[in-house]
Image (cartoon, rainbow, N blue to C red):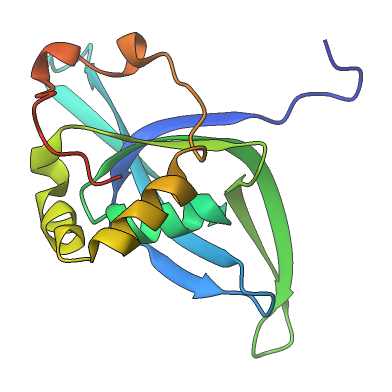
Amino acid sequence: MANRGVNKVILIGYLGQDPDIRYMTNGAAVANINIATSENWKDKNTGEMKEKTEWHKVVLFGKLAEIAGDYLRKGSQVYIEGSLKTRKWTDQNNLDRYTTEIVVNINGSMQMLGNRLNSSSSVENNKKNSLKNTHLKKNKHSNSFKNVNKKSLLDESNIDFEDEIPF
């Protein structure tokens, strides 16, 4: 075990809005996404089902940010592995503010989950790209994802392997 501690966050949730993509001065992409996770339970007193949703701010860097911008949309299900970071900034009234985010950089991972139905609009938009651009994206993105134990994340019986994969 690490003697300095462990800072690791794993989320599986749904995007609340389309990714917000920006570029740093060095040209590297940064994507901001909000992910909702929910838990359900039965109230012991009333017997009714309850639900609580948590919203998580996630920041993706580099190739993962580009992939998020190209393929993720509001409602997309995604697996995120990153670390917690707290940023300090000063607002318009010169007050110190803090924001805690899950940062996904070279040490983290992002995996798109769900079937083609969840991302059909982004698939259709990307089919319009030229063959050259599709080939470049395939090469650029092929090594961006870490392997994830898909058995624990997906019910593979719902996947249609005959579908065209856009990358």
